[in-house]
Image 1 (spheres, rainbow, N blue to C red):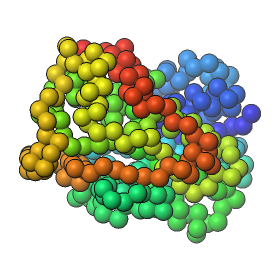
Image 2: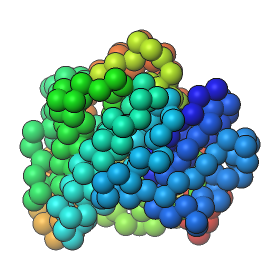
Image 3: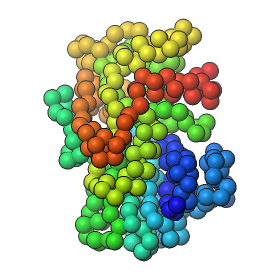
Image 4: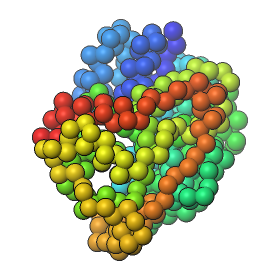
Length: 341
């Protein structure tokens, strides 16, 4: 049994990490903005009564995580804002992501018990514009994002770089391991609809004008959580780990949703826009979309992401769930929470 601090425990990924840690009989100290409000969906998990403690912490306040990490064997830092259309990207995204990462690491530096920090980064820190002829690896870095272009991607890149720079400069007693998930889907432990699962809801509600030439590097949230836990537990874990299963085209997702029976009562896109003319029209119309959505469309339309996941499979022993089954379970979960009605 170890004591593990997990930051931002109310999040989609973090909630599953907490569940996985409790299932392994670890003690978990989770940070939330206001511990007095609790985290009901976590406090009902098996083992939570005896082994889950909630602590208030603020990403933007120095020393805020001191109490949370004190006496912990490891820290899993997941807390970071995810806003595609931020009104003030510097204030809403970059500052809390970068400063929050530094704040957590500074607190870890004061805690001699901490032996490892696992950071939730993102594929966004590896690229913000996939290239059809390039296979991405953990050695790749996103160098294109700015405050005006995919600012969320910029926040994840700068936060991860800040973490590695901190390790190089401070030479702490603990080491750092980073997990870089791609498009995270799967069932949720709360009724809150997360940003990636929102894509399925939008498809079924007729938000998309047609089937666009988009592909998503999908990965089940339970596999992402397991990757974090193994990155924490395995002594040989090191560096960065791309965490993603297959890249799935939008057309394939629509076919699956029809096969699952969701096309009959919902408004799935039918018009084929996954062609050269369709790509041109989508790029043209992207300028009428909210800025974050427009940025994403212009940098991802017509691109099929390719990436090497041999490291996470071999070193952490991750065997990813079947993507189609993950999509099926995601839809069933969305239906159960009432998001498809």
